[in-house]
Length: 464
Image (tube, rainbow, N blue to C red; front, side, top):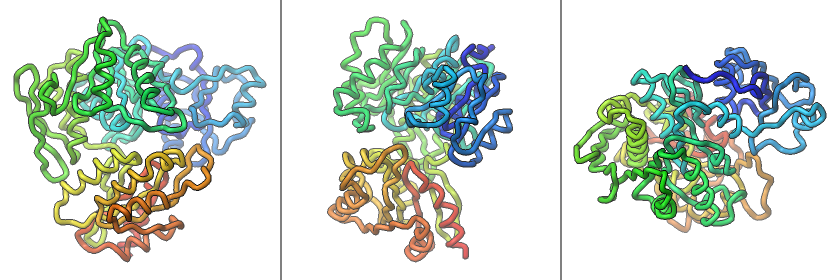
């Protein structure tokens, strides 16, 4: 039986309750019986789903939304200090709890698996959640995206396992004490919070150091940053380290990945034996995510052949190469990729899955700081497409940086030989794409902002 509700979480108020990370915690608390309330900037399907669970969700931010008897106010790093509900909490002396602390409290008393890395976290966490559920283990999970099957990013299970996506962006993953931690990759990102790779390594070392004594680190044997992290933590005496990947030295070695349209067949060598299973999403990076999930489950004592079969039931996460539909012989697919490594991986996956088709990309850069540091690499990644449309930068939580615009990406893309067009009016994109696309083409909307809204609009325009 899973634990109940921590005392501080009996009547929580979430500022930004509709966010991917915040809504997951709110859903779990609501399912455990907490009196959940919160606010968000706009109406959404997530807000409706929370209301269906009994939560009170206000639209817009106002001091009056915060009940006087709230047991705490939950915030993420994106909430600004001048938020009226946050100011009201101070007036009422209501404790303010960071999202990561709230999530950590929900994991207490459970066998936690924390999935970390610069990219791939959501997919790997989702694969584990689906596989463990398929095996009847009824895990709790909190994920940064909605599973395509259950259609939710979090649930409260009655089993003793809790699978959580562990966010390194603001160092909040250092709050967790997992039995098993996965590190998929270690790269420089989140430039507003990390000034160098040394700071990134220090942060990941702290995360790994929180693994419970006798616990396991599952870590890539292929990605250079992960290999360096492994070297740095190799001497932790209470830590078991399991490596995975194509390296000959990997403990769980990827022997072969065979593309099969929009799926892959993966063969690994584990304890000297070959094991083959299906991954229902294209691309070698997703296959590697599945192998990481397999290794983590085995570390918890779950038979490998059972896990391999259950992983085949995973059908994807919304926004991770999600097919939005087809119109006029043109498929429209949505990708959350916003870091150059992710962009390259998804573009290569689509190339492999649909050989012979033209690939058209609608890319929306995410964050001024990321564009400033990685704009050149983003542009180079777009050279993998046959043609691209680049939108203005989606600011999210950031203020503009003088001189930092999408032009940085566009110039780099053109220098790499890419066919790229700037479109400043997002509403004009469906017509632009309709003028470019031909039957048989693939259209990929890409980015972590609201570019995802364009998929249905493009399909409508193609159908008209």
